[in-house]
Amino acid sequence: MARQIGTLVIFGAGGDLARRLLLPGLGQLVDLGRNPDFRLIGVGQNAMSNSAWRARVAKSFEAGGATGAKARALAAETEYLKADVTNPDDLTRILAACTGTPALYFALPPQVTIAACAALAHVDLPAGTVFGLEKPFGTDLKSAVALNRQLVKLIPEQQIHRVDHFLGKSTVLNLLGLRFANRILEPVWNADNIERVDIVFDEKLALEGRAGYYDHAGALIDMIQSHLLLVMALVAMEPPSSIDAEDLRGAMAQALRATSVLGGDPAGSSRRARYTAGAIGGRKLPSYVKEPGVDPKNRTETLTEVVFGIENWRWAGVPFTLRSGKALERARKEIVVTFREVPHLPAGFSGKPGPAALRISLSPDDISLDLNINGSGDPFTIDRVVLSTEFGAGELGPYGEVLSGLLSNDPTLSVRADEIEECWRIVEPVLAAWKKDAVKLESYPAGSAGPAAWRRSRL
Ligand SMILES: NC(=O)C1=CN([C@@H]2O[C@H](COP(=O)(O)OP(=O)(O)OC[C@H]3O[C@@H](n4cnc5c(N)ncnc54)[C@H](OP(=O)(O)O)[C@@H]3O)[C@@H](O)[C@H]2O)C=CC1
Ligand SMILES: O=C1O[C@H](COP(=O)(O)O)[C@@H](O)[C@H](O)[C@H]1O
Image: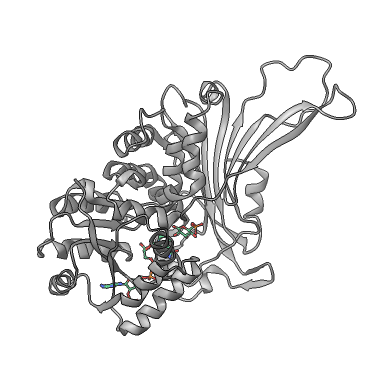
């Protein structure tokens, strides 16, 4: 049985993730009163007074709209500890400051998380301790496998929450209801009826001061390995018997095991590019290589597209294109399922607006179905109509959902060890091809739609 968490400890409390996403999500969760009370301790290597930390927590809670009595009380009593989490003595001191069962959230750069987990081997962890580990999990397949092995020496797998906050996004969760609570979709959800699937996460945001992390990750690891492959697994998986942690994660892992770069050709199935100077909505941006902290020798991509295939009966031959990039003209965040053309359009019709398509937008939360009908005017001309609806926003934002799972030790929305390893296995051939320079690093001006050649040709 899961123990009640007495203290949530955030390692990396002074970082960008904690301030912008984790603490606002925590405030929402606390205000909702879904979880029993717990204490909060922030840990970082820089010195910070308790009062400065409390003001910081209160500001982040407010930013997430959490201004209720419970959130204010938590912010008023939280404490901050200056510590190096890779040092066993410091870790022992942190655990001694906890009340009840601790939940340790590693909001740290991946190399520091690896070192902290090594140091935890020299520390007595209280029974029931829960871990929340941020993405990227490891820095490559080898290090992810080693980290998984190290973690299960420390605590049982059920207490390890590998975080992908995309799995806490309400639209991503809505995919489950959409696919499995409607009889009309499942019969056509296969290669016989679907031509292609595109999962796109284009952002207007640029580096935003995150060079220390991003310049070693790039778009492929930051987004495709860490998030979009898991979204793809939800789109492609077989219907699970239940949505409990084992069934859901088992079905996702099965889809990932069947996935690899299309045709086993990482160079032919991937493209990469990096932004040059430009402007987005009047905001001037320097070239990526001139951003503070960037090392041009890393040749980090800020935009990528990779085509994958899923080798099973349901999906054989259907390309799944995953794309993500920064500093683009338009934020486009959606899953597009494009159906095949009808086998025969009765002679006599004119107009050809293209095949039907289902669009599931990740932001804003909505869904639309592009259909062909006999439009207004000439009834024998085929026109396009779009049926669309908005989803109601979830009660919690993505990080509120992630933290709710962690604090109640329900791993349904966290990523299982084998899923993480599969995601690394899937992207490694692309990383290797890029390292050998088998794929050109192209460029695009910040604020554009990407390299012009990409718009003219599909991979
Ligand atoms: N920022 C974002 O938008 C997102 C980030 N993530 C993930 O979250 C993690 C953290 O990212 P982010 O917050 O952006 O990174 P930051 O660099 O902003 O923060 C990392 C924090 O780790 C702390 N830290 C580093 N080394 C140690 C150490 N040895 N002991 C104690 N604390 C240490 C630093 O403390 P100090 O400041 O005191 O030096 C710093 O506050 C990464 O894995 C990232 O991939 C995931 C999703 C989104
Ligand atoms: O994990 C990450 O996600 C964000 C995008 O997620 P959102 O929920 O803020 O839309 C991305 O900007 C960032 O680079 C990446 O690390």
